[in-house]
Length: 310
Image (cartoon, rainbow, N blue to C red; front, side):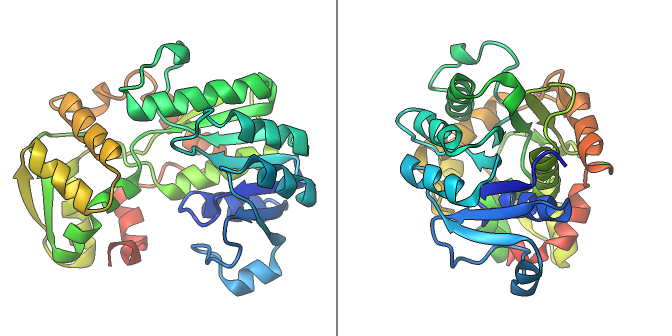
């Protein structure tokens, strides 16, 4: 085990919670850094938390001083964290606080949209790619290549929750475009992240692509959810404006909702992994490389997580 003490920022998230539990299973002492230390952590029962090597600690990724304080109190040498959208310095102060506090290894949850080369050339209108690229550039200003790994997953299986109200009502509005997603699960992303967090880099790689095994048209994902719920979900195809309004009603910030409409339209008609690009097979293999098992299929994940759809 490379790192005996690790700190997880955002353990209440679907990915951070799995990363924390994975790190604990691998023998690490896990510090759970949270804005509200009393908040429940998905999948981690009170009994399991008390019997495991867990400790809660207060911290806010948007507050560099609290980040450094949490790291210093924990004595952790490895940290898992995610993007803070809207950070005025692209998280530079946060990454510096990690280093100043004693962190020697960072696992950063990034995005497939970050290019292998030319991160500095991504334009602001590419909202998700730009935000993650800028953060990765900040990360590399503070930590050398051998001390960081950016995890770059594809389309989250949990993206179906952008339509949670529709799922509950059994009527989902989808844009009129066919859009394929690889449906990488939070379980796989968290397990890979937790493994890298404790064990460190492999082969000196500073970024790792991750993809799911199911290249599914968006409509098919809701048919699968209907199947596991035992009720058919009605699909209504809508134009860009109605699709935008649907996402806004689901609670997405307007810039994010508009960007999702944009990239869905751009990906329309591209079959299978064409829109993903040349990294698909690599990302699929990486899941097994770090977890020891094939990537989880979307239907299996949906069957285990019915509670997310109610």
